[in-house]
Length: 253
Length: 214
Image (cartoon, rainbow over all chains, first blue to last red; front, side):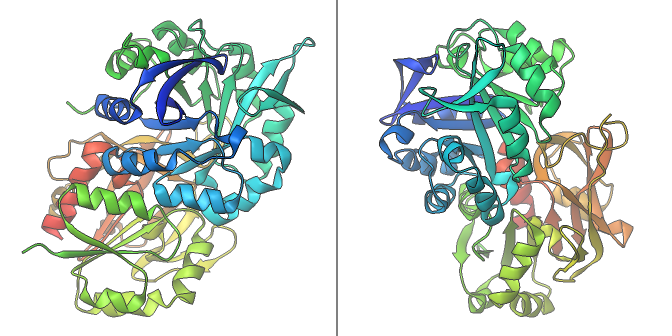
């Protein structure tokens, strides 16, 4: 099965849509939208607090609390999780998985520390990838603002050996552009990752979804703008995927 | 009269989600933090995620093991979820051998892995929704009442249960090329490898079935 995940980017408790992880556009109330996506049959919900890692806040937790009372699918939370303490707080608030980027870039060992305490299944490495002049990709942090100097593929391999449960890879250049995923990047990651990979950044229409989920080693994709601006519903997306021969969970009638 | 559902919190597991799921189906539910609180339970929930050895370490050091065995003497129902279900078996081979609660005969073994995905899973942990089919027994049909064959449930695991008594396995899941034990029932002892609290309305339905039938 391939998973379709609704991605909800948050700033100051408001649902926003980014373009290349910048240039904010306010969409609305995340509490209303997450319920819509749950009821439409999203396989998971992903919450990213896009300023938390910049200002060290953890503003997502109230929202996660409400989500866990109403949305009975896996909830992944990212943004501003810097320590085991933060991680435990997020899990207590109702998160099932944590997406970790900035904290892992500065201290990779935090991945194995978190996995040891919370379990591998709870730890998602979040990679923000930017293509470089030499054709390779570099991992960025602080929501795509800072280059880490790390090669994405080497970083993915290293993180897999540290006991993570999944990888979320966001292509900075493709994010918010609605023109399709970075398929070269996904193909490269799909080859080296030993854990499930979630592709993010670029979904504009069903064709992009079909292209993305046809890549070997890509297990899931996130959809944001297409849902937020009511261009498509989850059942519409899944029906197109199924018609293209991509196995996805059909919603109960 | 509604029955008192108690969720064991040994510090490991997605307690909040499980708690909220039982609240959503309108049951009288409470999270308990100490073994002596088990006494007043009519139904016991054993949620669990993560590594088996770590989970059992917490269960043993906090004194839950004897309390659970005592609770079960009166044949009161218990539901183990994910590692909570795995913990009910004799032993697990995840990171060495670790003894479980030994209330169900059987072992926890690693799911087969193969690069070409024909005889095993390409990646572990397996993180996905999988179609689940219940056996044709009364207890299985009760647990999966109003849930169609092939309904999807959410799984996250690398290890799987191999019950010694075949009839204990009450449902199986198809993970790509391999079939795994998805749920168990043995009298008043219930377990699911999947996460009903994370499997949408169908998951809530299963929890409701457990409350009404167990």
